[in-house]
Image (cartoon, rainbow, N blue to C red; front, side, top):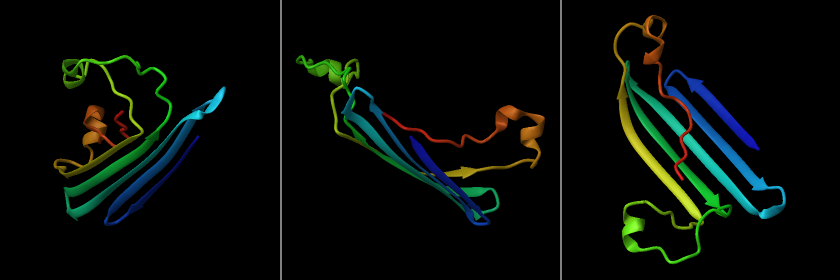
Length: 118
């Protein structure tokens, strides 16, 4: 299940989404993700980008219960179990050129969309 909203204003835009999933055979194995992104237009072409996500994770049935060596954890060859995942990003973006760039070259489109990191 997913619920999302997007608002675009002259000063920028806001996107948010709430996503929930579970295994049908066992409702205790579930995951809930909340994502929000705001883009504030400082001046024409220059934006302040803020995004964040938080997730409650209870569906990691693939994580091994055996002892994992430290080097496997540090090199990210094996994953540890977790209950929460959170992320916060702050950045600036600058757009320049013709307003028709995406018509001339569609590969130059914006990288808008949700990104969840597990």
